Image (tube, rainbow, N blue to C red):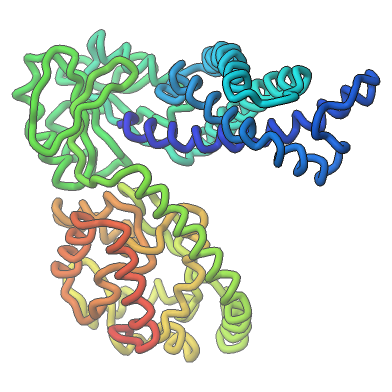
Length: 485
């Protein structure tokens, strides 16, 4: 659950710390110059003044220290476990590990200078750098802790958990989560097969059902993962629940404190001392998801900037040709059923939703989706916006916010999801997107079941390369208007 994410965050933090330590080297140069100026100490070697050009000259003569010191520090931070358990360490414990690492790093860096015989190395600069580096590392970690806690308090980057079990081991698991808000985990309820526990609270969380209720709960609540912390005697009871989770794309984990199984396409991890088996319905490396998000932010920001004149013209055109707001806002179902507000340029009359009931007999799509070719609710400019897909430009704001991705299954209406078959709900296991395989394969010319299977194909075969292929095809579809109605 957190193991791969922790490893990835650890690699990111190593890169960040190298940058921080390099910055500390530059800052130490100016602090050293300030100290010498105030105390009238002698000028250090290769320092021509507290200026940027002076720093460049100093670095050109001591570039081995600029390169070597950060590597030494990060290596010792890593050996002391700073990156291995970063998400589960308290800030106090993390600061202590950084202090210990700093002391050893100072010794190792001094040895580095001695062994390489770096001439005229200043002891004052060395001391200033050590103190500056330590303070910089602690400050950056503190800021990151605050940022993570703030993001989690606002509901961002949270994982909703349904915990099965209320025994001693399960309660310890729950307490560990409550003690570490920076993990980004939120328990939404507990499951227990004891009838007399239903509706009661265990460690502040309510028992909301029995194991047999899990298929119902995962279809009606926003759940990202179901964790089974149950006794060995319960093993025969949870198989159907795991299969139900797999069918809709919900990840599951099983506590392994009493046994160690080897099951195909599973992953064994450790969660703060709790051995778990993970059954992942959607598998992707953390670095892949990280780059997918970076691409989303970069592309959406670029598009909004590049098309800002067009966005302004469209807004004026909508205002001049029809009554009502420029943007159409609609609640859609996102990742694992999360509700969010989708933005589009309004292409229909203001009361289009009220008129929908009168047009149901004209629906040309099967399944719970409603679409007709010559929809009388579409405005004069709306037909052009839809044909060219310009009406979807505001969705790049949804991408920037994080509710959507550039590529992913199209976000459905909540009422459509209510009519999904169980296997179709798995399309919600991935963040929805502006474009997808269905979007570039004919859209309204494709039946609902085939559309759903296309989304499953995308989820099962997802890669950054596949996203790039879909993006390239999308440009062709937008230019030709293929499949748009």
